[in-house]
Amino acid sequence: MEKQPNNPLHGKTLQMILEHLVEVYRWEGLAYYIDVNCFKNEPSIQSSLKFLRKTPWARQKVEELYLHSLGV
Image (cartoon, rainbow, N blue to C red; front, side):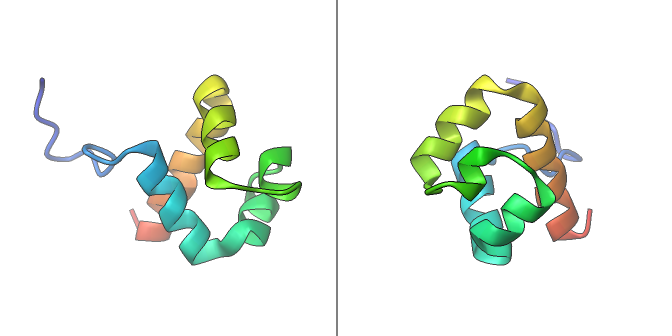
């Protein structure tokens, strides 16, 4: 496994990222910034993870918002 010292996503799971974003923005904020139904209609970590793992563009937006929330 390659070391990625300058990659702020290295070592972070999608679940960890999503839980951080829910803590910071709440579900309403996530739905505002990323317009997907899994954040709007009966949101949960598990249903969101399932969707994000199948949808690369949405996962990329989640990762970008995570980096923004860290000030990176």
